[in-house]
Figure 1 (cartoon, rainbow, N blue to C red):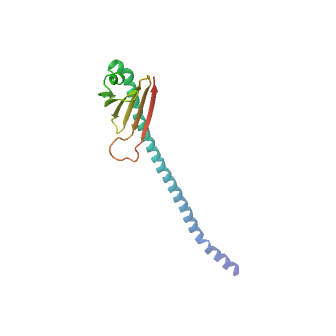
Figure 2 (cartoon, helix red, strand yellow):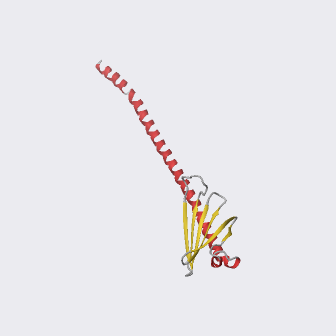
Figure 3 (cartoon, rainbow, N blue to C red):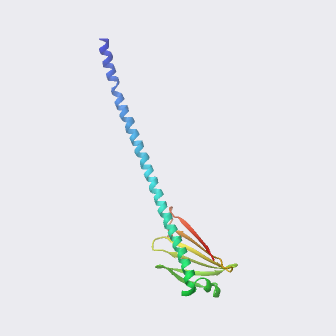
Length: 167
């Protein structure tokens, strides 16, 4: 009789273990699911910032290329940077980059002429470009591209710059 009672009590004691084991496995799976979801959200955020950074870089590159194009070809087509600044240091003109136009302002600095323009692209990106032509023959183009030039506040607003120096 004592043996039968022992086996019967042992059987009833193991019933709660299955429930505890199921709760433990369920909470482990929920924790893994939360960790994977958190990782996916962070990856999406990084991808979004990367895309915005790329837009800003492309805007800066396009602005620098436009300035370089007009500096090289403007001497034969129409004097945009160098000669226009020599004749009228405060000249305001218009130049075209692709389908966008920009208002060019020229100023005389100490030892150089500076030409500045902002170009707005079809997306919300834009570029601020500065061209300095030193009297020594050195030329400097600085182009800052911004992914979102709208007036609204954007937490993902990114600026990238390119600097080109040549003689």
